Image (cartoon, rainbow, N blue to C red; front, side):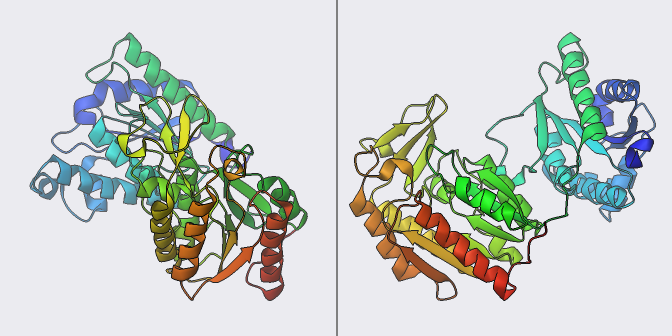
Length: 417
């Protein structure tokens, strides 16, 4: 039974001075589900009507200040930022003591801001649930979303309980308790390789590379590079969660550079470099900008080749100069690496639809990117040019050859059967 021999401890976090009724209802539901609610009050202006397990004064002390100093800090934004700091420190301390099996936070925009910060201190596998009035909104920066964060829209519940609110809150509480009871934490038995890609209709190398790496004694996690997948990849890399990465689809760098909402945040392609993780990188799909297919095409992209992937997502290609810009962005990011980096440049194409006869075929624009990449690539990285398409077996074989060399040289730990 292990940790589940006792009741799972669920942190229930919110401003008890304004949401006392809702938070007490949540605690009741969690208790009925055979879990132990641990009430953490992050109020600033007043005390809740119930005695919390950790008061606003405990939160302020964790932030090395006082509630009065927080109230005098300037405005509601600075006050909640300080409470977020204290709550994060307290939660991290509780986790280190083995006293956290899951967390659930209730809030509007301010509570959600705090919740994102608290969630970031808990590792992958500890259930993190946010009940928010801005769930799924573009107000949430992707770089602040934990890889396994769960959210539900706090529908109709901004002020007091009602039938809709009770339904939403009870679902959320049941979900976090169920997750705490059944969650399987990441197995650290074999070195983990992080890989980025798009669906196999666009990029196919993972079909070859994943089984080959697994045969060598590694676990492989493939991240879907459509914004949030790249965000999860970056968050785990920042925590040094990978032995090495095959970052072969860096399209999200192009997306962010061109201002689309399909972004992983400004630090895409930076965290493995910063964490000293060996990187095999390729410009998979870097010629494309992903856009919401349900919105009109922005004027600045009018006339560009367009591929409608489904009713959610469409892609346009960028012209030669735009690709040269992206090459310079990529070079700047890779220049910060503190571990070996190999950049593989496939000269015959970087995604399925850029081949001859396909709608995104623009060989002169691809050549512009390759020329610029050769010119600006930092001397600290190794360039490998292959006269093939990224979806060919020759490309995958080259990536695997580099990895095998690193294993032989001790750059990457050997896999375990």
